[in-house]
Image (tube, rainbow, N blue to C red; front, side):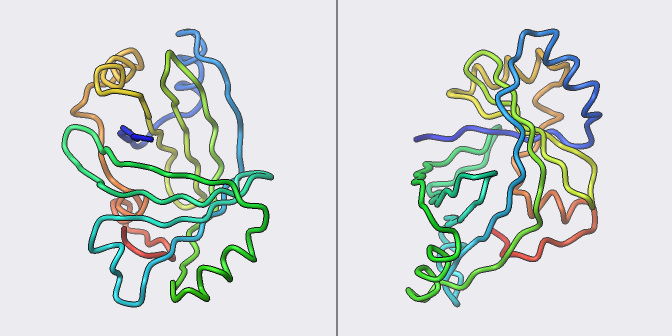
Length: 176
């Protein structure tokens, strides 16, 4: 599946949620997320702009591979996800295959659906809330950004690690 997304930093969550509901967005879920990112010792995936991530999202466990990451006006990539049944066993299996893992910080994510887009508000203890707009195409993404009162100049194509670096913080993880 193709993923097309941007982030907008320093948001007032309550005001954003009020705007989303006024626009007819539907609450799709609230999640507590814990992630582990994998790479080789030589950071082969990182050098190819790929990501291998194991994520616990409430009661679901999802293994994700992202590749063909391209940054321009938006960040796009090919994303493949599979659901697995055991977080620790999957982590051990990948470590047994030679992957090293780093744990990232847990976050709370609140997801809304507007049109065919997801608006995902991420909250970490260490930094201000930010949100991501993920859309099926760039046209809808730009439309949703505008509906929310922003312009594309307000957006970032950064990874979560770059967001943390922006605030002078570090994630306990690999820079992907």
